[in-house]
Image (cartoon, rainbow, N blue to C red; front, side, top):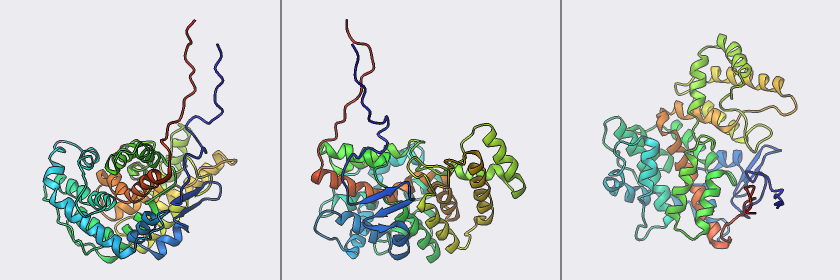
Length: 363
C-alpha cells in the first residue's frame, strides 16, 4: 500500500501556522517589523516598555499605555523577589540555564497582577539571582521605579549601571523581543492553543530556546573570536575552518537570505556604548573577512551576519556572564511569547498538524 506524502516542507519552512499582528519577518528583503514598525526605528525611538505595550495591546482593541506597562513590570519584579526563596529552592546544583528553567516553571498567578507582567517581571529577577548565587553573592533587590533594562543590569551585575549601558541593553531588548514564528514562539503558541495557562506556555517556549539550533545562545561567537585572537590570524583561521567544513558562528540564518536587520541595530548600540571593554574594531575585521570568504565560497547564496554575532559582543561588553546569555535573551523574548500566547488563545484553533506516515503497513 502506498501512502501519498504531503508536499508540505519538512520542518514547515514557509508554512503559515497563524495570523498575527505582532511581528513580520521578510527574509528576502532582510526586514523585521514589530507591531507595525521596523526594528531599527523601534530601537531608536522607544524602549522595552514601549514595545511591550504595543505587543500586549496588539489585536486587543484595548491599548495598554507605556506607563502602565512600566508600573506592572516593576510590580512583577517586586513580587518575584519576594518569592525567590521558593523559586530558587529547586534549582540547587543546576546551571544558570537549567536553574532558570526550573524556577520559571514554579511561577504562578499573583493577585491583582496580569499574568504577562508576573512572567516578564519575574524573568530578570530569577536570572539575576542565579548569576549572583553562582558567584557566592546574595540576590539584589529590584527597584520597581527603574526601567526594566536598568533593573535587569543592576540585579545581574550587583551594581547600578551607567546610562550608556542601560541604553545598550534596552536596544537589545527591543531588538530581540519578538521575531515571527520562530521555534520557541511556535512552541509557546502550540501549548497556548490547548488553553493551558500562560505560565505553562512560556515555560515551554523557554525550553525550546535552550536548544542549540534555536539561536538564543551566542556564546560560540565569543569562543570563535577568542580562538582567532589577533588580526594576523583572521585569514588563516577562517580559511582553515571553511576548508574543514566548519560552521562560522554568527553567520547565516534559517529565514534571512540577506543580512539580518537586527545585526546593524546591535552594532550601532555597541558603538554608542563606546567599546565598553570590547574590541569592536577587531570584531569588525573578523566580520568583514568572513563575509567576503562566504561570498567567495557560495556567490549564489552567501551567508551573512546574523543577530548572534553582535549580541555576543554587546552582552560581553555589558559584563553579563556567558552562562546567562540564554536567560537574558528570554528576559526580552518573554514580551513576545506572552503576546503570542494571548493572541493564539483569543482567535486561534487548537494547533494539531498531521504527519506523513512512512512506516510499514500491515499485510
